[in-house]
Image: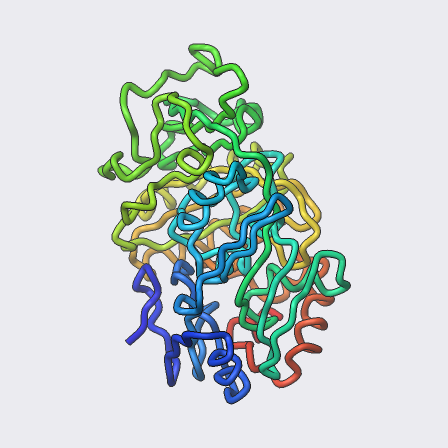
Length: 406
């Protein structure tokens, strides 16, 4: 039995494969009628499920080729395994997700992101993607190719990714500070713009934002004492009540390498047991204050089934299925208790409140948005669906979820 990280999805595959070479992978793909790829399993819906062959690329030969022009990395590599060698070479990625435990290909394929007004989703760093197509052939799609915008955030429907090339930049240091007590929603937009990466955490119990995690480049001045009426935390914090701060990256304002501060969690620790569900919605950046005020009207429904909520920002991009495609965005994230029967009705209420804000759901998390609404939210979805169908006319890489939405 194969499950996702959270344990809320048991995959219905007829066979599970861990090929040890690209050639073995090509044979599996060529001989399969239906096939999906499982990364680190950090999706909360059935996006990776299949009734056919489920494939992990974790056992493919590791690739880590670092150059000033970019880094080529095998698809199953976790970000935490990539970042330290990159830093040692004097280089950095533009951003990271909150978890260094997730695979590069899985995160890029679903539009996963970090935070920061100037930073796109993780997939915006991709300049080339190598994949095995439905015919079993290995091909490379590069930035500038006509189908490239539909081949990076492709939800696993373009083929089995074997390696990616990512843009890099000179390494830099970051200091992370946690402040507490950001009240109300009046200062949300200013707060989100205050650092290289910002996360606002709330329990939706009427007290505003209990924690603000500020990740500033070390070459800019610290924020002043009493910034926006907040108070510095008097010690390390975990964003989930009762969580162990030892699992989190250093917070007390001491500068360190980007890869030790931009993620929320340390690679050496499992951030939680996985006993949770997650949902996330991206709204236009300019609407975040109004969207939060509307959600506050149903906080008595949200709070009882919530572990923590998080607000972040993401820059616009041109990737057809990215949740930030075409617009600077703010992400409203919910980490729910692991009880689908209690959570799903609240998810539907959240979606109803956010509908006027054209909220796009994260592809890999729990959502109930209708296919008709999804098609209205992603203006380039028809182009993406056409390109994916052209590359896979038999639907080998599709499943029930992708058939529903693409």
